[in-house]
Image 1: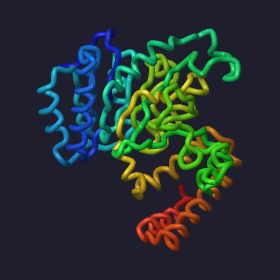
Image 2 (image 1 turned 180 degrees about the vertical axis):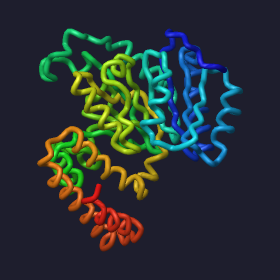
Image 3 (image 1 turned 90 degrees about the vertical axis):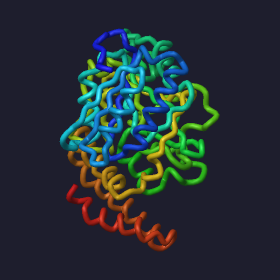
Image 4 (image 1 turned 180 degrees about the horizontal axis):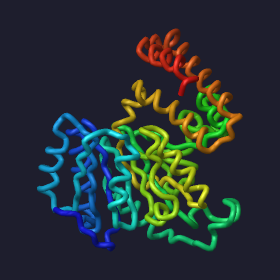
Length: 337
């Protein structure tokens, strides 16, 4: 079905694919099933942006979507310029009240999209509070970015988001300070994992965070109109932190809605060399964009020490030669990032 240019749509769902034919179809199938169950199909459009896949993804997606009673657009790129760049192509064409960046390796759980849309509807924007400090206003006065609770395939909680990058929060993550008994959960960390985790699976209320992952990030149109697109200077890893940092600078609130749930398969590949290297490069990019130049060598030393700790851990404790090899290679590159 051709793209509908109506401005009455509630949501644009953007899925970026790259050689993930089967799981991309699964992502679309579960998302459509959830929308259909809540009678939302006529209020939503899909954008599937393929970054030059070689596994027949484009043809498979077109064949699948043609059978669905849903508005959709397939964008088939002839090269791969990254996750942010691909999402921006769709965001520019969206006419909906909100967009959600939905990873191609997700499984939507029942009611997720309805709950997220209702959350925005229930928290109307209060422009009069925009100039106030966070201590002077409710964190939902200008709720601009939300995400569901992410789950692993076994339905256990998958941690996401964290505190904005600082020398302290980065040290907590890289040097395992956030895993310290008792005090670890009180130390700000760029990644809310382990003892620093801020959410529990039993949580029911909106949880305020500095940043949340781009796995299933829903953004109001007003936020995009005010702060612009994703930073396509980042190929992958860190674009979600960067976008949330800009949003917070413009007094937009960010939260996780634990009543909406989506399974994220990608956590199983979080230890890949591309992911681990991309995370390090992402921090370097963020520091070059937002932080004073004098912090850069200190930040890189924190990354270097963190990589060294992980090298020792995997070489001598877990005996994971593959991971040890990855961190050995990262150590040799950090100062050139």
